[in-house]
Length: 72
Image (cartoon, rainbow, N blue to C red):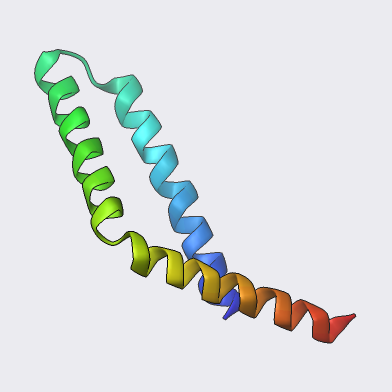
């Protein structure tokens, strides 16, 4: 399970870096509109799947704390 969390974390960091690089390198109105549209789509998906995302995060955190308590 910890390998999965590490992969998810690394993917998130990589996606953030690529997004920031893209924002810095892009120019022009068309590119800005495309970026805004992608952000709107991501937010819409997060709202649509809000309960599933919340359940997943809750299960992951409870698993982390359960496993952490076994070491102490």
